[in-house]
Length: 139
Image (cartoon, rainbow, N blue to C red; front, side, top):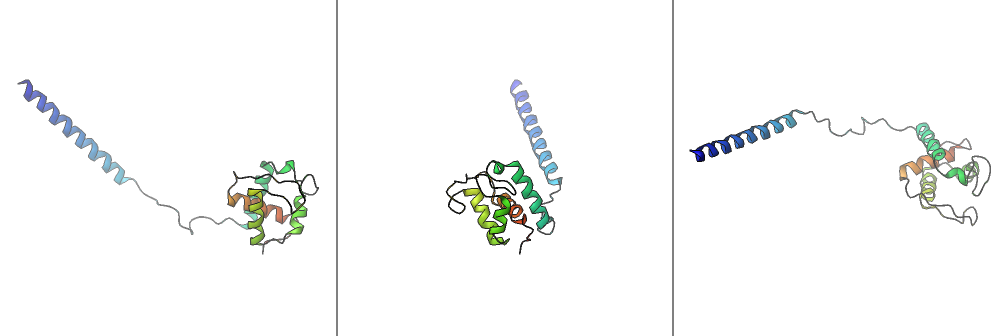
């Protein structure tokens, strides 16, 4: 008799688990999947937005330790950088690489520290901001 009760409890437990498992799958199937946004659904970042974001990134970084917008400190002023380099996509990418990797030799022997924690996209926004300081627009 106890064996029958034990078997009945096991059957009820298995039945309960089956109902619970089926219910959770059903709930998951009812959730709406919006997928990932398509390119058309994501608002593009305008040139103006990228420059504004770049300015914020520059101001929040350690750039001001060695650079000023118009005066030379340890490194060149950001305006001098803008005057030296034409505002092109190639120069944005080049300067972003210099921001990330650091280096020396272009403006003297003072070493520019690396900023490997920056993404390429953020470094490019920073470069766009710097290149905009002489009034030139990207072309």
